[in-house]
Amino acid sequence: MFYRMTVFSSLSFRTLGALLASMPLVADANSGDGWLGVGSEDPLIRLAVAPVEIAIEAPTPLTGNNLELLLALSGGGGLGEIREKAAREFSLYLDQQVQRRFGDFFEDERVHLVDNRAPLTLHTNFDIAIRQQIVDIRSTRDYDLEKGTMTAYGKFHYRVQGAAALREGTVDIADFKLRARYSTRAPKDGGVVEDTTRQATERLLEDIAEEVLDRIEDELEADALLALARR
Image (cartoon, rainbow, N blue to C red; front, side):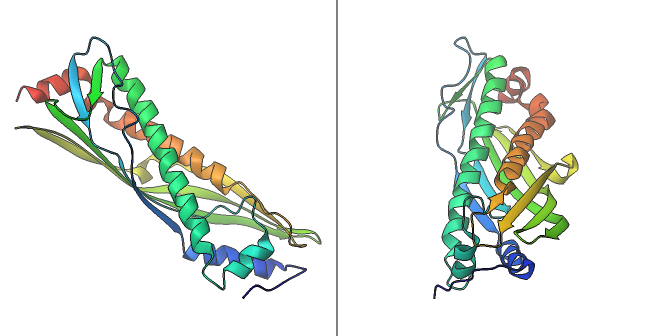
């Protein structure tokens, strides 16, 4: 049932934050075929790429939402739609970052990406968890302000498979020690929430895509793929 609150205490703000943190968004998604066809016009080798598998657990952004409405939705399960929408968007964002960085790398390596009829197939899987840690909470007459850091955890697994060859590995994302700062400003008059959680999450996803490629690029160079295909 919808209810009206004209003034919000820091307790209400923290209650909503705790609710969103305890019920994080989770995205399970497979990428499309946006990076097929990427590569050199004179390739050294063709590489089939399976859709990127992505699972993301992350805090739900509040940007652009009315705190009064969010508190009302928290009693009726309406926050699920907000979380699901954010989950899809974060998954798509990571997929785009992976395709761009890996695509540029393979183009430089003269590896042509296709969906089939290649001696090797690349499978990739991201299982990511992004955690918030509150550093400071302030309450003024007009708004509540929360500041903190977000840290990336999880695993990345890759597998390059051929008819008689296999190379695979797992990367611990926590090893990268990736962090980003966020802040959330909630007006006490029920106004629109200003929240940088989305921007912080997207920065972490960008960094994850870049760091993962840096970690495994030696295994994906054209010479390494050619040697694996000859086994």
